Each structure stands twice: as C-alpha cells, then as structure tokens.
Image (cartoon, rainbow, N blue to C red; front, side, top):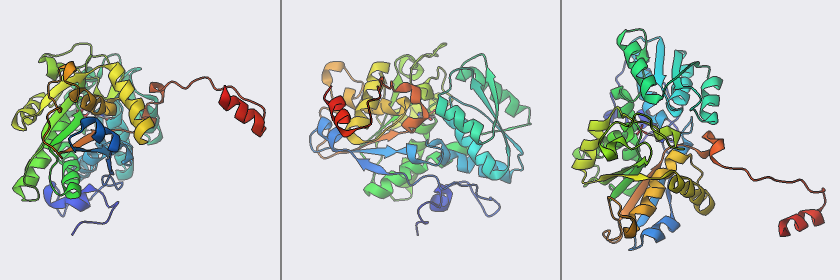
Length: 360
Ligand SMILES: *Cc1c(COP(=O)(O)O)cnc(C)c1O
C-alpha cells in the first residue's frame, strides 16, 4: 500500500529507509513531486523519445533537499541531537532550517558570505536558523562544519550524512513507480554530487526489490566554471551563476564517479549562457520556472542532441521511444536576481492606453 499523497517520503517508502519504531518522523509532506511530460523537449530529442521533467521545486522548501532532510532530521532527533549544523550554497540551509523548526531543534547554517541567492537566505531567516557567514566559499564552509561535527556538539545534516542520501533515493523510486520502469536516461545537475549518488542507489535498490527491470544511464552536468569531476581536478575558485552547483571539491566525488561508470553514463559541462538560456526556455515554453542550477540538465539535454557540439553523451542516436527524465532541482523564485526584469513604464489607467502600450 502506498501512503496517502502528502504524507512524506518516509511514510511512502519506509521499507527502503533507515527508520524504525523509535524514529519520530519529522515531515513537511515532501516528495510526490510532478513528473511533467515535455512535448517540446521530446521533439528536440526526436525518434519518439519521451522527455519528462521531475519538478523538485514543488517540495515544501522548494528544492529536492527536503527528501533527505526529513530522514536526516528524524534520525538526529532519534539520536538525541539538539543542535543541527550545515554548510550550504542556500538550499540545504533552507531545508535544514525548516525541518529543525518543525522538530524544535536549534539550527546553525554556515554560508559563504554574499554568495547566497536572496530567496534561500530569506527562507533560512524566516525559519529561524542561526546564520554564520564566512569569508570563503562553500568548500571552506563544509570543511568547518565537518570539523565542528567531529567535535561532537552538532549533528551535521549535509549530504555527507548518509541519512540525507537515503532520503534522496526516493526521487528514483517515484520516477519508476510513475513510469512503470526506470527511464533509459536520467539527467541532473551535479554540485556536491550527493543527488546523483542517491538516485543511482535508488534505482539499484528498486531492481533488487524487483520493482524495476533496469537502471538508467546517469548523466550529470556541472557548470563550466565549477567542473571538478569533469576535469578530474579540484577547482579552487569555482565560478558560475548557478550558485547551487558552485562547488570545487564535491563531497561525494568518488561515489558519483562510480555511479556514472556503473550506469554507463557521463559527466558533461554546460556554460552559464547555456544555463540561463535553458532556464528562460523552460519557463517560456513549458511553464516550468526553475533556478539556474536546475536548468543545467535542460541545457545539457539540448547539448547532447547536437552532435556538432561534441557532447560527452550523444542522444542523437538514442534507441527509439526511450524515456528520459531531467531532474529540475529547485524553484525559480529562490533566485530572483537570475532573471532581469525589464523597465516597465506605467501608463494612464484606461483601456486604450493599455492597448497602445501593447503596440509599442
Ligand atoms: C543541492 C542542489 C544541487 C546539487 O546537488 P548535489 O547533490 O550537491 O550534487 C543542484 N541544484 C539545486 C537547486 C540544489 O539545491
């Protein structure tokens, strides 16, 4: 029996998650996000392919991080933690702050100063987290958080916490449950590389449980200015408009590399211009507004269909009728500065003036 919609991923996928009768479940009804068929992306791929967009921006704090956070915070509570801590490019802090509030736990978020998208910082403030900004980037923040975790005062809820990865597997379960089997390809953005690791684990577990007959090729996209896995070296000063994947030394690097190899997938890069163009395109053509990092797999899909651009993984000769899933990880409203609002001049309040202004 599948639990009711909105009951959260632990209720729905309990048998696959590290919870027991002693675990008090902290949930905000995460998961169960729409898998939206995209006729226009399907057309770009051709050959009868069906492309679906998994819209993770519709989680309670508007990113996929909530899937892992419900498990991480429930387990922290079970283990008697009173203080949570995380490093964040923004979405982990928003999610941790919300679930901590729900569980009545203290939450400290360590952020790279001046690098957090406005909507995400707003969320951490609204949910009542204690915020520390550091002169440094995400990788520095994570190093500090790991150290404070080792000292024993805080429970770390970054994706180095296996409970986070466990919860994030549920995105793969939902995709299989909805499509009836795994897709041929799963495209997603890669930052700290927890999500590609988690989804791959989820697909594997579903095959073992005989809920699916196959696994997809995992295709991850990094921003060109923050592409350590693609270039096989640490990036000291990662730069990209896609702040959620502005990471130079991913925590799950090795596991992500293994996921890509085992799945016969690939890691590729997309430029900031391609990311922003894909973000606009997805909003204007499919009505799906996502933050820049989430547009990376859309830019990537377009790149993979264009053999003149030498993609690491070509979809030009894809098996006919294949299903392709793109995870779009966070909501567009989180990063309002990524979209330029044109100057909008007021006209007099009468219908003729409104029509005249439309003609200009
Ligand atoms: C966290 C995040 C990512 C990157 O996920 P990783 O698990 O760190 O690879 C991508 N997009 C958004 C919106 C995120 O919040």
